Image (cartoon, rainbow, N blue to C red; front, side, top):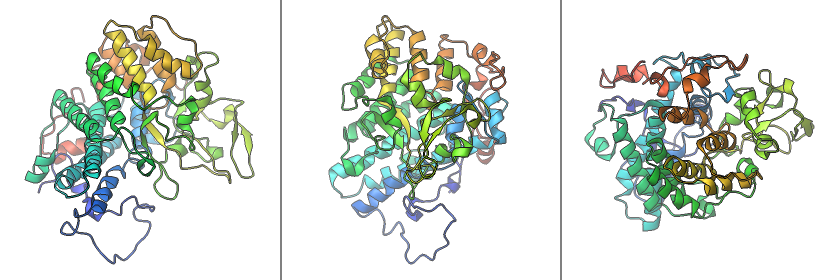
Length: 484
């Protein structure tokens, strides 16, 4: 079997995994007393659940949402300064990268690892004789995660090779890139199947897993990127009219005690002593246990309206008090704690009562609030009125309602509601394609030492370069994006 354009030789079988291991790879050198093989796996409900659990295992890793993915989706925007000392970050921020950028290959391989694992689940669990409700949930999660992996690939790279069940069964991995339209069609199919198979909500034992609302929410997003506004309104209404209300307070979405509330449609779970993400460390002040990366820029801070509590909940402002636990207790945040812009993100920071960063903090990837804003935008851009959905989000923040909302209101609200959540850069690109904003002008402005003029070239920079390593492995089957 060839490794092919998706580098599947690096995709080791889920049968060899220690599912959700509490130890990082290579830390412990132990002698195996038993091995699981394909002859003895895929037999029981326990096997099926172990297999779907393994699909989520890469998400909090350093190579995905622990660091690499959060850098790819956040750093190019006009909301953040890279702040850290990693060399590859400046190339992303300044649009000076090329196809050899290491993060592109890392992101590509890890997403196809997820795809390979979902394909294994879809092939094998479909044939298993287990409880039908359990089977539906597991197959629904597999479709959801495959759709999610292809969606994140499409956002970064446009059309990509589509490796599905028949390709695995036939050993067909050396596939060319599908068109972006065909990639979107596969993503829609996976999310639609997930929405039909998954329960509306989960009980306590399965809290944190995607439900049908998560699938409808991502369908809303995918439709918006294609400007299928009526489809987006219909999909989004399944969330708005479903059991996914906004949390009573914005900050409940970023508090360890309340981070599994119904507004959170999909999240990267983090559990200290089990499986954690490092983004909390990267975005926290170094004197408080972090590494000072991805600092909010003054322009983002100034975007918040006076009295908007989301500013305090999202960004560490000079004068704010935080309980660092242990001997440090309540401590004031001062501008010198950020060696660059004077600010840090607060959304992903928490400290244990005994002191030290609390690594139980999740990374929300989709919230109901965003779906409300997509529906509001879809209505406005299709000639309707989006006041109702927009004002639900504003009302939760205690902000005055808007009448006859325009795209300027949507642009503002998405920026403040979703600050630091990986949306701003991709919003600007889709709005630029629609002629709503001028991204070359926005990124070309001189906003000071940490946000100097940058050169964004359309359409080249709408998508990252296909990793050169993948092109080489494919023997030329993969074609590069225009301009790279």
